Image 1 (cartoon, helix red, strand yellow):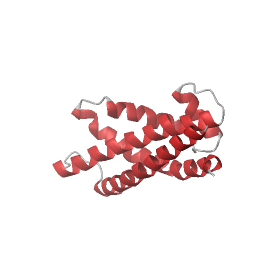
Image 2 (cartoon, rainbow, N blue to C red):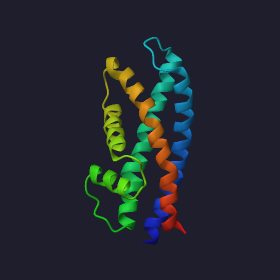
Image 3 (tube, rainbow, N blue to C red):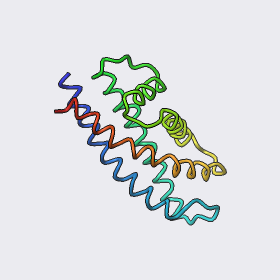
Image 4 (cartoon, helix red, strand yellow):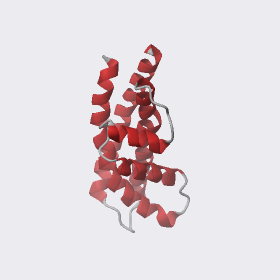
Length: 147
């Protein structure tokens, strides 16, 4: 169990770093806004935002939620199971938002068409706040195991 707690602490450290860089990118891109005439520099900022969004969502859903399941003696189950349990535990506000976050993360990872990239940018701007808002609750929930 000690190794699980140590590993979870390392993941929480990564969570904090990923949160900081996503917050930076989100703030920058929210000011820019999505439009058809984004400059190369603005496109680069949005690309950074989508990558950082995907990374933080992976850390939360694929790593942190799994650690919580292990420590809470839960069966791992599907991604949807982990998300639903996180909502029941009060770690996240909305399982539905996190299912959309996961689907968007998958879309980001497999997006090769430039004509749909702008809708991805808009969705990332919309779903970043619930993703970021979950971090404080995750940290709070983890304290019961790390004391």
